[in-house]
Length: 118
Image (cartoon, rainbow, N blue to C red; front, side):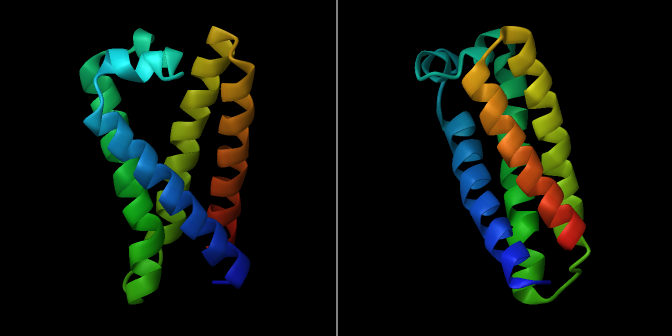
């Protein structure tokens, strides 16, 4: 795996681990008040599930490469994040959230880069 792919995978790990922890630790109303308006459209269980998926993907991006065990999991985790971001893109487009659309597309592109290069 190239250095650029590892750096991007590390960046994605930090972003999605933090995002997942926030989704698990905060109440739905607090997330919505903090700028995640999309949370209003989802149940608490759905938000927690998204948080768990983000944390699992973050672990899948870094741990297999770091341990040298089952490196195929890195691109699979990146594909999973890409799918999450595709869903996020749809949500932000429906809600007409320009900032969310841009950030989601950036994270989607980075996930595709890791999946392709991993």
